[in-house]
Image (cartoon, rainbow, N blue to C red; front, side, top):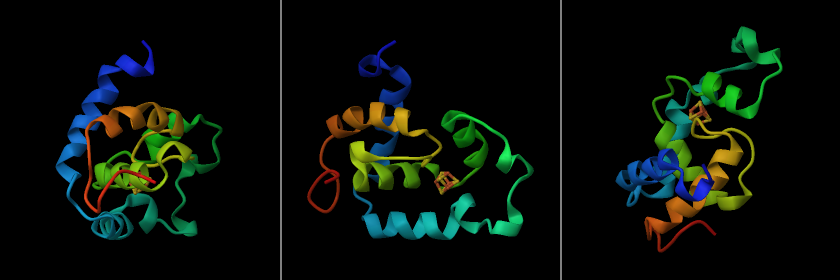
Length: 116
Ligand code: SF4
């Protein structure tokens, strides 16, 4: 299945519509306050932190149960767009790049536009 007709990504893009009018500063505050990876300190590093794994595996482990996955993903799509890197919003960068055109197709966001 190509990224252009990936039903899963289209579904995620639709789901993010609920955050369309939420200011980026509010999203950022939610991620900084409630993001599971934000709360972790060096001492709290999980046992699997040094295991070799793909970005997809890392996203699944690091973001599992994070209460602000959608806020994190919406913010990254707005700020980084296609230049995204690493793991954000429970997705590896390849998935976010494939998601980006679907997200763009959903239309305008708050603050006058899309990412960049
Ligand atoms: S979704 Fe993942 S990257 Fe984003 S704040 Fe939560 S744990 Fe961190």
